[in-house]
Length: 439
Image (tube, rainbow, N blue to C red; front, side, top):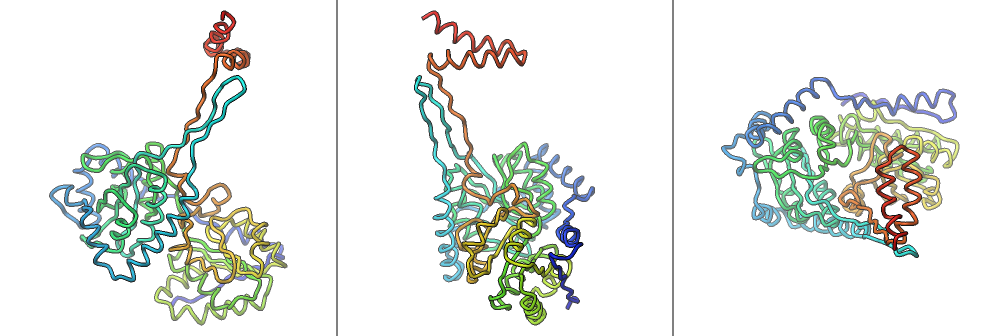
């Protein structure tokens, strides 16, 4: 077992801000070699389409096929997977899907418009994207929850076609992932992964249709590819390592809190788990729980490395200061394990998802609470939001001037346009003013 060292910080220490900055620092710069490799793959996919995709799939996923048709999974195969998984898994997926769908239906935005006194109509038309691509990680781990969280908001938004890609190294297919795709109503599924899958979705090939937006998590090659194709297509976000911050008043079972910290630390060594409390004795108790429970965990080595490298127990003077520390961090997941979470949440300005009360484990949000688990990381909750239906809708402004409105506002536009030296703009507006005068 990796030696476990746990960082202890106090917000009252003179060097706290610098220590916290060092703790939060995460290098998201892309290795030059990774960048060049991804650009090469994307360029080849853009130029050679299916042929390049099949070559890279053979190279990176050890999956050789004679045609792209072999890399598409039929709707019948999705239904077969749904029938094949144990009934408790199917029931769990369907229960989670129902909650996720119900929550996201409340996010759907509708078109609106209003009319000025002179008859001018203004408004906004809200329409879904035509086609989106969903990247689902494959290989060592399977993420059916990611299928539900990404596909269902798109379907609620009314997206015309959802295309899913999932790598299947050496041809190993995960039935739970396929079953989740069936439940979520994914339209087409391709067994593709890596930068080549992102390129196929962004540029389109003879077989894979080009999409308007790509969503879903992936490794460094996938994240780098999404960064590269942004502009050709939309993307959801560039996600960093998983994060959890727990604010506790000292009255929750220390074992519960330790396991909540583990729930993110087990993702990978770069994940970050932080506990903030005004109760020093409670911090000691949680540290004891951590040391007791880590050896019992299947992913104990990863948890120990994550907590040692990027975890911390932070003492504050009170819950107000705890909220201030949390806002400084802007965590992906924030647990308010306190007596009155409704009162404390009013002090929280920056967090991807807020879990309120002692019984609300972050893990519930990962799977079945309802809100999306695709969340801003690395402090980007200061300006970003969870994935939602709004990410799959776009807005067009509606502007319809009456003759009277064109005459009135045309004079305003004329003055502003001539002030900018754009006389064609001015005269375009003035024609409508003059026409109104002639009537």
